Length: 85
Image (tube, rainbow, N blue to C red):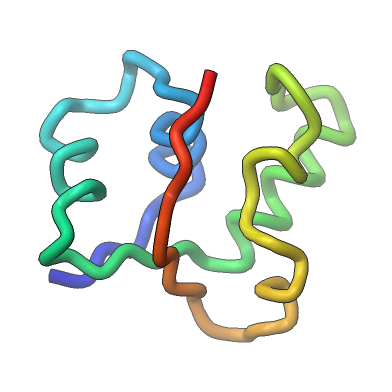
């Protein structure tokens, strides 16, 4: 299955937030699924962080896909999603 992660879901997943339903976490981690993230989600997260509306333990660069993905106009495939606290 192809999964396009919403900004919330992506941020909750990579920060191990307890608001992420277990079924979502399982679907993201299932190797049979392809997981995608829109570049719009990356921009949204960076803008909100810079405005002080998105508290993160460290800057978005520690959590978001590499900047070379930002040049793509279609959703980016996430080959490996880190989960850290």
